[in-house]
Image (cartoon, rainbow, N blue to C red):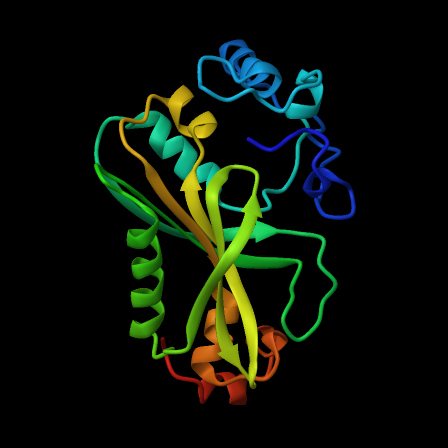
Length: 221
């Protein structure tokens, strides 16, 4: 549920494909998305307004986050309580520096069950990082088009707060068309940044160097 004119869809942020340039999508899905984007469909939303362009929705691209995986899972099992966890690659047009890579792995998770709420989500995230040995964790309000409320997770690194990912409760415009029975807590966090913290590295690029001697000295996580 991202408006078609959202900056995240621009060429400077996303790797669009030339082969295939377009990916077929079933008509019933595009019809549902069109209705939700323009008017809110059968949800209580008013939608984004404007005109939904089906060709824009069919553009081939390298995924910028792994939410596509959990959405497919919810579509297949919308009425079963679940706690789903996955790690997979994502691609973004990022300038390479000590904390950014154009290709990295995202830790994706969702919780769908009766009573799922924001405190449950925050506690889950803080517990996750505590088990990784990271105690200084904070969450702050954020904005993502497909979650409300939304938040970002930050941890203390080198005396400064480092953002590790985003989270929130999926909006009804996302879950109701799938037939989901309960609220869905969702999060996506960078694996490489987490590994950098756990290993005590100063630069995320160290994870991909070809120094076999250095790599052999690193612990298996």
